[in-house]
Image (cartoon, rainbow, N blue to C red; front, side, top):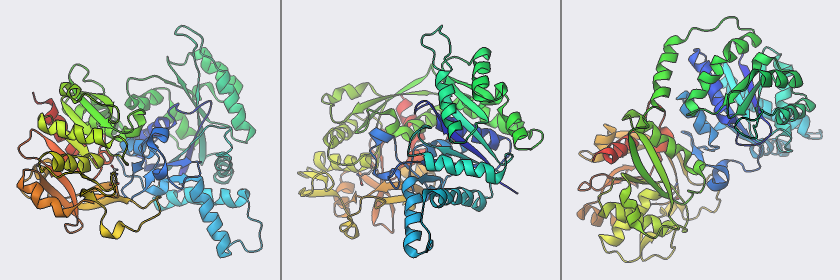
Length: 533
Ligand code: GLN
């Protein structure tokens, strides 16, 4: 069996939804009973997304195997309801590191090492290895950036070569572009698409499909014009118009015949009948959209709230849980650095504090965690939100003067959150956090046990600091319980206040395990509590 490849490139500008197009095509193939996965190429020089600011680049998505990945990997996982390993996020830095390492080992002895063929070979090797190791029917590879960028050229060149090597029935190209309308009734403009395809063809790639972003459905005459100028069959110019939800996109593409056309191009005759799969998916997709009349209001108080994508998985996880209880979730992002009047939080049904790093904005989070506790407002604190909830309790209930995290104040009198001794000498910033899935043990007769209905769970992590165990007896004497732990009791994983309506902190990141139709348990419990009047 030979894996078929679909390469998704982008034109005109970033932010057109290449990730959603990639995920939707993958979903359609999965619904047709094909074994699929996705790869994201990021042509930047960071080794991974871990060292990038979420405000600039969106959330860092953590995989089961501890990859700090581009947030598109999260889209793939959610659409496919399938774990994606970190090897599926390929960056320029990883490719060049391998090539340079091989050069130093003498693997290219006597040869001048070049972008073509050595870098392009390394890119192709990585893509093919994933296809072979995972025995995939289809691998969809999304190339980050926009055609014309210098950074992505070696990747596009590698993809071009693969088309020759695998044959035309082995590889197809989908190019995502834009057809803007200058006003609501205005004509859909095709020139940006024409130019972007010209740029792609200049480097030797003729797209098979165009996925054209537009506000209203692409008109037939626009499709014809685009088809003529880009050498793409009119029926393969696909309208990707605005939808109520990203979960409608697979259906939008399907209705335009993408599957028949794609299978024909791949030499696979006839569609696979997958109506049962479609029925199940439609229930999930529709349920994600249809609850506008019933709202739960959630305040998300954090540091990186100026870009919606900074906490994209948390937003999705809230919506998955909302759909399950047939409610739509209204999320207000509140900047913890500028909040002054905490009473403004009283109008929310629940308060969520997501992950974060560093000093800036941390005081506002500590006060928020304290406000939620005092006012009996359902609270879910994730990672930083867990650590700072403990600090808030330390300061306000245990009267521990200067309770803090040594991340925030190195010489705090009461480092309620601190580094473990073995972590004190780590100097590298990249990849040195505690990353990926770890086993967690839940204590009996706790809310945590009720929420997960289990005594052990496995959850993904991304943190460096830990609850300082010295303070635990004092906490537990005063009504805050650490209800889960890991590493034989070395690390605390969950906290709760049994007397509170709902007060839960988790050291792990539950948002990365939430999928449409399969909400994560702590989000479910939080939203249920928030929607109880
Ligand atoms: N900054 C904290 C730590 O490193 C929390 C990290 C997070 O919220 N992801 O432990």
